[in-house]
Length: 202
Image (cartoon, rainbow, N blue to C red; front, side, top):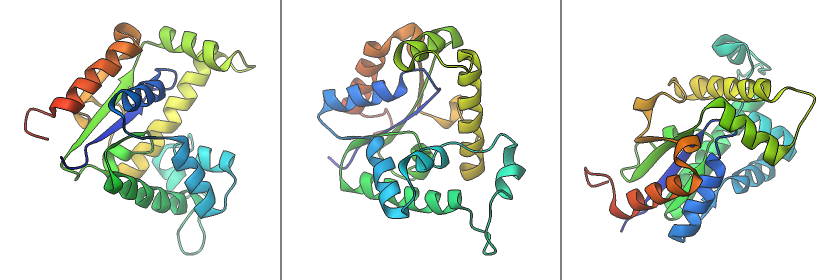
C-alpha cells in the first residue's frame, strides 16, 4: 500500500490535535504536530514560540495586511520564509510514509497527493470554551474572545497562503463535529476511513 496521509484542520478548542494523535496511535503511524514546530525552529533558527505564531496564524487585518507586513526589499517576510520551509517539511514527511499531520495547511500542500484524507474538526463555541478552560485554564482574556481570535487568525493565514476558505466544507473530504460526536467516535470514523480508503479508491 502506498503512503496514506490524514490531514487534520481544526477549530481552536475542538480537540482536533487530540483526534489526530489518537487516530495515529490506533493506526500505528506517526502524528506530526510539535515535531514540525521543532524542525521549523531548527531550520529557520527562529525561537520556537515565534515559529508557533508565524507558522499557522496571520495578522488580523486580512489579506492586504499580510501581503505588506514586515517584508524585506526582496519581498519576502519571515512568515513567507517559514512557509517555504514548512511546505517542504510536510512534503518530505508525507513522502517518508503514512502519517497524520495536524494543521499548517497540510491539506492544501498535499492536495495533489493521490491518497490523502483531508479532515476538518469543529464544534459549537460552548463545547470548545469548556474544553479550552479544562485544558489551558482561565486567562485574563475571555474564553470566547480567545476562540474568535485564534480562529480568525488561522483563517487569515490559510486564505493568504492557499487562496481558499478555511473551514469551508467543500475543501475537505470530511468535517466532524467533535462536540456532538465526541473524540472517540471521531477517531473511530477516521480509523475506518483510513483502513478502507475513500470510495474512489484513494
